Structures are given as C-alpha cells and as structure tokens.
Length: 452
Length: 176
Picture 1: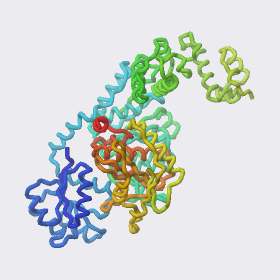
Picture 2 (picture 1 turned 90 degrees about the horizontal axis):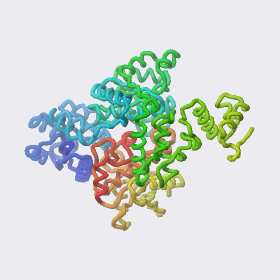
Picture 3 (picture 1 turned 30 degrees about the horizontal axis):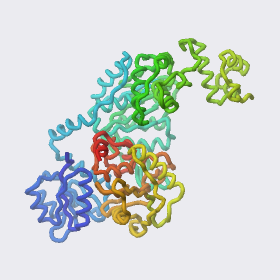
Picture 4 (picture 1 turned 180 degrees about the horizontal axis):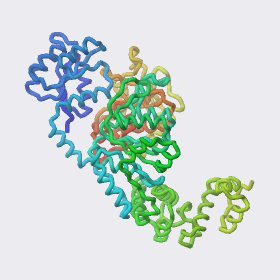
C-alpha cells in the first residue's frame, strides 16, 4: 500500500538519489527526473500525486516548469524546493499556483507533513475510505476484561460514545483502569488511525505541563535548540488523554479550557496560534464537583469535561471479574517472562476474590507479577501474596478486624516496623499500637523491630 | 558499539546508557546483545559548516568491520547526525544489511531546553535502536503509529510509539 507517487525534479544527482531513497523508505513511490523535459515526458505516462521541483536548474528552472505543469495538469500539487529562504521566491511561487515551498536542508518532519497534506488535497474520497477499510483489520479494538454488570455497562458506554467526538470524563478509584478505558474509546472511534496521546497531568510541574501540552518554540527555554510540538498538535486528528485532570493548576486549567473551546493553541514562547484537531478524554480519581466547591477547579472547565461521564466501578464491586483478570495477567506475565503459564491454587483464588483490593486492578496485576517473580515453579499459593493474604488468615477476611490487622501489618512493613512512625500514620498512640500487635499476633520481634 | 567524534571518547554516563539499552534490546529481541568496548573514531565524517557528522559516511566506514552472518552491528553516538538533504537524522541503517547507526544527540531533553531525563533518554534510545535494527532485518516503515517501525522525524513522535514491533512487523522479523 503506497502513500502516494512523488515526482522529484532536481539536476543534482546526489539530491535526487537521497530524496528518492528517503521517500521510498517512507512508503512512497518515486519518479526521479534530472530536468524539466524529462519531467514533462514522465508526467504524460505516469500518474503522480505531488511534484517536488528544484527552483535552480539549468535551462528551464523550477518556476517555469511549475507554470508548464499547471497548464497541462492543473490538479497536480507542486512544491518548490529552494536552497535558501527568499521571500521573493516564495511569494512568486505561491502566486504562480504552487502548493507550497520548502527550503533545503529539509526538516524531515515538515517535509513528510507537507507532502502528505499536498497529496491528501488530491486524493479521491473513495480511495481514502478504501484505505481506512483495509486498516480496520490492522487495528482491533481493545477489549475490556470482565463479565460483571459493571464492566458490561462501561463497555456499552464506550461503544456509545466512541463513534462521536464528545469529550469523555472517566472517573474511578486509582488503579481501576481509566487509561485502558480511554484506549478502548480511542480504538473504537474513527480517530483510531491517528495517535492517542497520553498526558499524566499529576506527574508534571506547571511549566513542564505547559510545554507538554502546547509545545515550545526554539529558544523559549535556555538551551532549547529546537522547537517541540505539544501533545495537542501531535494528536493530529487523534485523541488526547488527560490523566489526573484534577491535579492541574488554575492557570493551566484556563489554557486548557481555551483549547477545548477554540481548538487552537499557542506554543510556549510563540505568538502564532495553531489550529488543532483532537478528541479529548479526561480522567480523575478525585471528585471534580468537590474541587469546584472548594474553588480549586474551574466550574466552566468542569461543565465542558462533564459532557459524558463513565464511572468505572472498583474491583471489590465486581468480584466476579477477578478470575478473568487474574487469568489475563497470568497469561500476560507467562509470555513476558518466557515461562509456561502458572495457575492459582484453588484456595488462593478464593482468597483473592474475597480480598478488598484498595488498589484495584493495578494492585491485582502487581500482586500477580510479584508472586510469579517469587514463585517460579508451582501454582501460586496464598503465601505468594503476602500483602494481600496473610498466611494465617483462616477467616473470610471481610471482618472489620481482618481489615484492621492487614492494614496495620502493611503500615508496619512500609515503615520497616518503626513503631513511632506507624502509630503516627495510623493516628493512634503507641500503647494502642502495641496492644493491637499483641492481639493480632503480628511478628515484629523476629524482624528486629525498631522501638523508639 | 560506541561511535565518537571530535569531542573524544564518550564517558561513563554514555557507557551506562549503552549497557542499559543493550539489556532491554536483548529482552525485546530475545537474542544476545553485547556492548563493544572498541570505539570508532568518526572525526573524518565531520562537516564543519553544519557542525554535524555525516551519517551515511559513518555507515560506509563501518563496513571495515567484519560482522558475523547472524549479527547486527549497531553504532551509537552522542554526536548529531545529518544527511545532505535533511537538517538532521536520528539514525540510519542498511535495509537487510548488518550495519545500523543511532544518535542520542536529539533524544536528550536538554536539547529542547528541558531538564535532564535519563529514563526517557533510555526509552528513546531503545526505540530508535529497535527501529534501525528493524531496517537491518528488512523492515520498512510501518503505518501503525504505535509500532516502533513507524517513521518518526521528531522526538515527540518517538515518545508516541511503543518500544515494540506490531504483530505484522514482529512476524516478519521472527521469520528470519
């Protein structure tokens, strides 16, 4: 499947050859010509999608050739290649009907974009549709795993909203798979042939976030030797996923609102506004309503994001999905660790289903990975899940004191059995902590507990 | 293999990067990957007017090394590379040949005025290495934006794609 036929006219054989190889590597078909006469001859035999003409050639130069092409094949977009930027040349070329001009040496990203744009100008509608249909097989939609009513509802909502361009807000506790749902939406949308760009808003400082989102111009930071495109530009017809959107500052919220409304951005350090084309998907584990009430989130941005909301239930609300998820992760890690698939001992699965999973699906995935790293041979036993399943647990694990015991144990592990710190975190006094450790029979002495 | 230019042999940080990248490549390609301590002097390929090293010339000079039949020789350099018609290249490789070359000059966030980001540098280096190695295995550019063989002419596009081949590209490589 070719991306198009490019006619290249340049008297310099090195340039012809290099450009030819480069476009070939990019997936285009090339027709190379050393002069205007050859170009005209070729054009009458071969159907080309775009022409790249060198402006400076002996005999008939690029501008004259462009005029001749315009008279015989007016539909063919022509791009003039010039050795040094010259406003005169550019204006003349464009006045003469050239599609655009580009200066040598070429920025490879700009060159490819320019040529693609010129070609799509020309491509027939039905051909584009045919290409899209072909690519259908190459990009299967992402599946959400689970049989529960909760997940089925999420899947239905994904299917409903995917084909539209509506902004989607995904909510749910940490680790419930908000990014997975975002990818599912993108993969089911007409935008799936274009990238889905992910921005982890919570992980970046304000300055870095601005640059990530909007890009920056050369020189806008000390040492910036090149410009960088921001994520909104990069999406180019695709989707932008804004994770942890509750974490962005009011200033960035204002910029973001403008982008969502105007579909235009200005790069940091730049003055020109650029049009962008993307579909927004946002996610948060916070309550945006609460943040609006507290004054830390703009209400107008909230209303813009809240057009279509998908709430992902926590894992403990869909326990029937745990076996399927566990199976998925066991398979996945078996492949990546290059080992035969290990299973769960029956008792282990029961206990995993009963556990509460405060960290949701991500915690389940990490737990299975950790278990497989520790136990490379047998089916996984409860002992392989120390953080989730206490080996001495005989009860169902759902009683209040079971949760308390597990929680205290986890905090003690975290602080390396520093009792003062643990008591502070748990917000109880040390005596109470001592008593609970004794009551639950937690083993600290053997580990050499630090008592302060 | 470390390729160095006028600034002399690369330092400890670069060697660490190579080791880390080699480990990841070995895992992804499921083959052995070794970092050559013998470095290669590319000063001859320097273009003063551009302040860059000519990528194709380096590849040609690398032909002096005899590479065993089932092996690929990947040169990695901190210097900026170019080919005459373009402002820069991230790397270059022979299609179905044993030689490939990657530059980290524009993979560093410092180049764009951002703070240093070693994990990101490693990820980008791994992706570009996989991309050029893919070419040595006969792969051309892939239309799946997520596949490491998709063409990326700007660093932000490298960040978009995964550090792995799509199913089609992987099948094509695995067959060899």
